[in-house]
Each structure stands twice: as structure tokens, then as C-alpha cells.
Length: 426
Ligand code: AMP
Ligand code: GLY
Image (cartoon, rainbow, N blue to C red; front, top):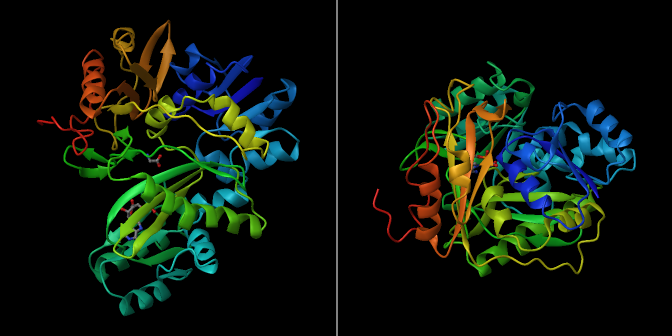
């Protein structure tokens, strides 16, 4: 098969690495890719949101499967364009990617189909949003409807804070057109967990659970990031809990999308909160998580390309996935200053030595190659994953690899996996 992967982060490196081992692969292309992906795929100077460029490449090169990694191209309709041309694609159409692209859409479809009884209201006017907030208890959650790079949600402790975030979104337009509408939700309380599945619109195949660390600082302090590290499995998400989230939330959502003429095909990522009255959905993502992919995919023993192709073809029924019993740990290495301003273009050393350690994979995220060397080119630079027999073993291996890598200003959290490790002494 000739395969084309869209994206250029750590998620895409983990996907590219697994796809490159498939017996069915003939050629792997990636746009735009990064310095690590370049070792397993031919990287192309086409932007991940360049619909015309992507379609042109697929047509001219007779690509058998295009896999779309990030959410933006999915929300923008890159998958639609390829499907219209008759090209197989992994990832949902824009109408289905609304599950990530519009929080109002998601709350409304879940409510309409009796999947959630969370209280919420959608507003196009700041005055009406504030009048509604006046009648509600606090804390209360205010969300920009559209995609806001993970910054469009605020859990507000007071009404004053909620008014201010309504103004931030709708009046000061902090997230542009994503703030045309706001969603005001009741504040749910409980532990959070995420469940990801492969689905072709009918069959749902769960992946193993993973736990991300969103905050920049140790002890889960400081601003939110794209994710600073992760592990899989997750001790608090047992098989019964996973099965109940799939049966009560994810499968009914997939059925609801099909019933409403927007069948969902690709990865569906459900962020849930475990309330006293059972699991509730807080967000869907229309893609693999990053860095969750860097711990989930290394545990997949089945051929990833086969699963992605079967999903794209609507033929997941009857497929069973094999997962490794090993623990996977991933520590993200970021540029100093991230998630705020940071410098780029720093030379990265120690990559080969780290990657040579037993059980270790160094996934590139924000890197660029020049003259055979790797330089930083983004906020999250690398995801260092290790497989081990238990959490301590996996994290010891991952941190040993981290310690071999260096660049000016490099930052990582030292406490990833703290809750799962027996011998953490931070
Ligand atoms: P989202 O971008 O929708 O995942 O929201 C980001 C974070 O806000 C979530 O991970 C939760 O911690 C929190 N959150 C979102 N919605 C709610 C809610 N209805 N109740 C409590 N916390 C929420
Ligand atoms: N790590 C969270 C995400 O991919 O959205």
C-alpha cells in the first residue's frame, strides 16, 4: 500500500513508526512530518491544512490510504474532499468532526439522544449568557463553542469570573469565530479519564486506556499544555469502567451520528468525568491524542495499518486487537518557556544514544532536520516513550533516556506517572 500521513507531531511519529513496520506497506509519505518521521517516511512540504495540496498529491501518486492526524484538517473538511474523490481516508468528515469542533453540537446531540443529562445552554448573545449565569449555581463552566487550542474552557468559581470569560470569548474575541457562541454547562465533579476507540461508524473497537498530564508544572500546577507526559494502562480505569463508558456513551454516540446522517469514522476520543451518578462526557476529540498515541500505539501488537485501512473501508466488524501487557510511559521534553513564548532552532544532542536504550522510543514532535542534525522547532519537542514490566520499570527507562538528551532550555516534568508508580520519590 502507498500510505500518506498528514501531520507532523509526536502523535504522527508514533503512527508513522508503527505503520512503517506493516507487512502491507510499500511507501509511506508524510506532510509536513518532522526530523524523526523523516527516518521512516518521505516528508513533503505540504501543509496539514492545505486541502488542494493534499488532494493533488493523493491523486497524482495513487495513494491507497490517507491518514489524518490533527484535528484542524478534519474540522476543515480535508477528509470530505478526499472521500468525494473516491480516495480511502482514515479520519471523520467535517460533519462528524463537529464532535470536537463544536461543543454546542456535542452537548445537543448527546442530550437529544438521551446519552447525557448534563445541564447546559447555548448562547449567541453575551447579555443572554450572563442572564442565564445569574440563575445558576457556581462553580459554572463557560466554553467557547469552537476549537480554541485547548484554551476555550473555563471552570468559573464565581459569577463575576463567568461574566468575564463570556466577554473574553464573545466580546474581546480571544478565540475569533470560535467565540460566536458560548456554551454554559453545569460543573461536574469527579476524577477524569479518557477512552479512545477505533470506529468505522458501526463497529467500535476500544483502545487501551491512557492517562495524560496536562499542566506544565510538577504536582499538576501552572498553565495547561497539549500534554506533558502519559502512561498506559491506567490503574483507575479497569475493564468494567472502560466497558461501561463504551456501552453507555461512545457506542450510543456513534449510533446517534449515523442516525443523524453524519456517520463517524476514525478515532473517537472521549474525555469523561466519573461523577457520583456515573460517567459523563466532558469532551470528544476527533483524532488520536498527543501524547496518548505515544503510549497506546507502542502497546498495539496487531498491525496498525491493517486496522486503519479496515476502519477506512468500513470493515472493522470481526477484527480483534491484540495489546501488549507491558506498561508504556512517555515523558514529553519541551522548549523552555512553553506553553508561553519559547525559542526555536536549538541543537538537540543525545538522540541516538537515548534511542539505543532497551525498550525506548524517542518520538519527535517539534523538530526540524538540517545537515543531518536535529534542531528544536516547536513547544513540545520530543516524547520519550519506554515499555517496561511495571510503572517503575517503564518510567526508570524513560527518564534514563531523557537524561541522555540535551538542548539549551530543555524542560520536562520529573513527576510523570507519580500516581501510578510505587517507588516514586520526587
Ligand atoms: P474540554 O476542553 O472541554 O475538555 O475542557 C477542559 C477541561 O475543563 C476538562 O478537562 C475538565 O477538567 C474541565 N471541564 C470541562 N467541562 C466541564 C464540566 N462540565 N464540569 C467540570 N469540569 C469541566
Ligand atoms: N493530550 C490531549 C489531546 O491530545 O487533546
